[in-house]
Length: 59
Image (cartoon, rainbow, N blue to C red; front, side, top):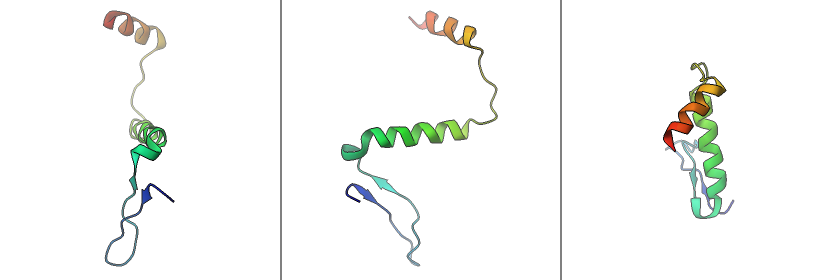
């Protein structure tokens, strides 16, 4: 697939993925967002009202 590479180890096993963000930038952002969501599973959440109040203070 153009713009995507899978570097392999000495045994030929894929160890990572390289994504050309010039071609797949939006997909790369979506993948990153998904990784952040996965990493934050189980963390406490902020109630919507509190989040809105925080946003208002930033403006």
